[in-house]
Image (cartoon, rainbow, N blue to C red; front, side, top):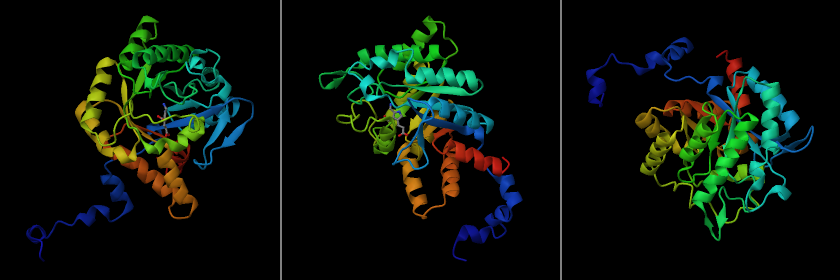
Length: 336
Ligand code: PBG
């Protein structure tokens, strides 16, 4: 034997703990459960309507009535919360994102429908203006610039509108400065002390959002990129500052996005802040895996479960994933 450590400890055999299923389960360090899963859903206008999304095989945009049926299934399988994203008709998109504050907009109507028919599931609404702007940016444009403080004012309006419709968790994904504090203050002032904020604290300017932009219909309209507000993928310390600020401003939970390419960021955040920490396994991650699955190159259930477990191992308390329903079904089958 050449390895001296092995030679000095001849009776240590790492494979003992792996010899059978029962002992592997006994020493297993992390578990995935349905309660770890949050399901993002895309909603469209109409009745009994479903539309496939070419770049997200297996994911559909649904009209509110069909979407509510899916939410009921999620609830049945023990998924604690869903996240809603509207595909706003193009004639309702403008430079001011005015549809964001319409109490009768698609998201608000859908939130009310879910609350009525599936009252005991959490509803997460995105806070960002991109579903409503004609230019596809998350903020308001002043000339060529995204105007931070004017955008924050609009986000407050969007937040209160969604909360008044029944949204439980606001998830600001816009990356404007000071928005968490401003939204928190407005919630307190308006008597919404119990509204939760899950901050997209470390959101990177990522190429992995492409299929999502197809799903919400902003990929054709987006002018330029989002690098003046979303983070540089090269940075890690900066993510710690973003998280620290969002916690100080009143966030209840923190999110990292995208997921799999940023597991190091998740691990640092969980270690440093010990906050409820979530990851968004984004559309591009889903698309990559599903493209390989469709070619017969990867096994869907196996890669889905492995990728989700990786988030738990990195320290996540939960994962936003387009696989949520499939994963919950797989877990039920495994009796977990
Ligand atoms: C927009 C938003 C994006 C996602 C969630 N909210 C896209 C973006 O920032 O351009 C991406 C989610 C995904 O890719 O699955 N505010």
